[in-house]
Each structure stands twice: as C-alpha cells, then as structure tokens.
Image (cartoon, rainbow, N blue to C red; front, side):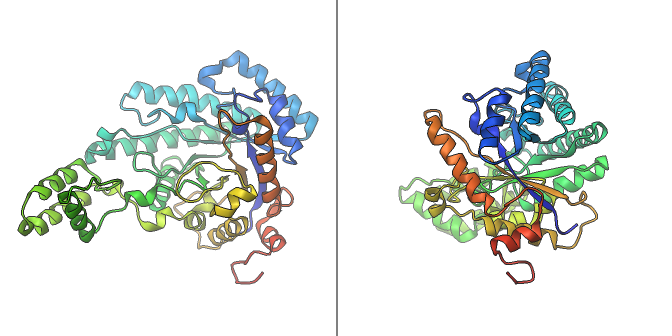
Length: 404
C-alpha cells in the first residue's frame, strides 16, 4: 500500500458545551461542507459520565442526523475527561482496570455499533514512576499489555484501526519517534491485531525542551547559577542528576569535570526522559509514521505550543503547518520500505481538524474560523476518498520523485 485514500474530517470538540446534540453538530459540520466527523467524548458521549440509557438515545439521534444529511461519524476520540488522569497507567491497578473495562471497551463498542474507528489518549506516568527505572519499565510493559488487549478486543468486535495518540513530554508516551515505533511493534507482536497512532501536527512542541544537555551546556548553566541567575527550563532528567548539579555549583572548578561525568552517567540510566532534535519536527513524524496513522489531527501552530489554532489567514501567516508539506511528508512515509514488525499500513487516512474553542469565544467567531479552516484544507483534499497521489497533483505539491 503506497497510495491511501484521504478524507477531510472535523472533530466536534469545537462544539463542546455549545452545540451538544448530534442533530446540532452534524448539521453545523455538514453546513461547512464536511460529511466525515470525529465525535469527541467531551461532547456528551463519554461512557463514564453519560450512562447506557442516554447513549442509546444519543446513538439513535446520531443515526437519524447522519441519514438525513449524508454524514457519518468516521471516528470516535477520547477527550479531556480521561486525558487529565493517569488512567491506563495509574499507580493503582484498580483504576487502570476501570479505565480499560469501563471506559475504553464501552467506547469501542459504541464505535463498532456506529461503524467508526477509535482513537484515544488516557494514560500518563507519575513522576515517582519516571524517577525509578525499574518501576518505569514495569509500568511500560503493563501499558503495552493493556493496549494489546484493547487491540484484540477492537478486532473481535469490528472496530477498524484503533490507536493511541502521540504526545510530547516524557510522562506521556509515545512522545518520541523511536518510542512510537516501539509501542506499535510491541502491541502488534503481543496481540497480532492492528493497532495504530494518531499523529497531531501540534504535538511536536515539547520534545526539544527535554533533550539531553551537552557537557558545555551543563558547564554554562553552573556558571549562570554561580552568578546569581535562576535557570528556566533546564532539563537534566532524573532527580539524581539535579542533586549532583546542585553539589557542583558549590564545589570548586577543579571538580567540575568529574561532576559532569557523573551527571552523564545518571542521564544514561534514564533514556526514557530524553528526546532528540528530530522528535520536535512535525514533518519528520509524518514522514516516519503517517502510514500507521489512520487519524491525523490537524491544528495550526507556531511550533511553540499545542494551542489547536485554526487555519485562518491570520494564523497561517505565523504558523508552520502547510497543507502541501503535510501531503508530501505523508507520501514519503508510504514510500519507505515496509517493516514486517509493524501493523499493516493504513489504506485510509482521516485528516481531522481538531480546533479548540475558548470559553469566552463568541459562537459566530467559532463558526467562522472552522469554515476558514475547512476552506483551507479543501484545497488539498478537494473530495473525500481522493488518492494521495491525486491530491498531491491537485495542489501542485512536489511528489516523491521530485515532480509536480
């Protein structure tokens, strides 16, 4: 598979707490010229909050609205409710089990009954876990086992392409390119079921804050502290490295080299706390892993934060996400040699606008920025189901062979 079908989709998170009934947000999104929708659990379909009876009514209303408009919920996705917890990586097994059995599996059933895919992010590692290499390794293995169980469950009930979203800090894996590849391989090997990523075009804004410092950088930092300066965002990883750094500040210059060497040894013991420069590049993530990302969340960003900005003219002037570059990177991913340890490549990609709305933002402004964002991306995905090769030619992007 080297030429997947592309679909433009809209996550209904923009409508949360405003347009909450399926008939409302289906009509709104259809009015924007989009028929593929990602239903966020935050917009009144979270199994933990809503209950079975309500969800049955919700699903009936959804089917009626989709039949009336020719729309469909192509994917379901978790929201902030589960994102704000340790969830599947909680320090208490009872909570991990509850999220797995009482949230993820009911959500998977809802997706299966709707003929949709499923993406989610509902786990994080506490600092106590990150600071203990053995504890972290065990927690990582436990997470992979749970994801493998979800993959098997989804395969059995007919949910296509379940997957977890990539993030951008050490406590939320996968947050590096190598780590994402490892997760997919481990889950696929344990389950023999397809399991994928959701790539997000703004989730490369944190990795470069967590790169391993060079000896010169550490030496310069010591000099600043000795001069009375307070360091900001200075990353050494484990607490043991910070303790050594504090000792070095008070020690003589003749001991500096020995301290830096000890700090280096401590950092080596915690590789899960560090990223590389490449991990902060959106287009490298797409180039390496888009073929295993059935959902690509689209947000405009300056690269400094994941603010889920729209693709308006104003935001695009300072933003780093450009449609043609996204398509080119996806094409490069599909032309890389196949990896037999990874799940099958995706035949369909849903490029999904995930634009957030501010609490005090006016409804008219929200609708306008959503319409502008759809208009921008329709230039690159002029019709749903278009082949990647056709989309590249339609927008004049450079193909993998260097032609336009």
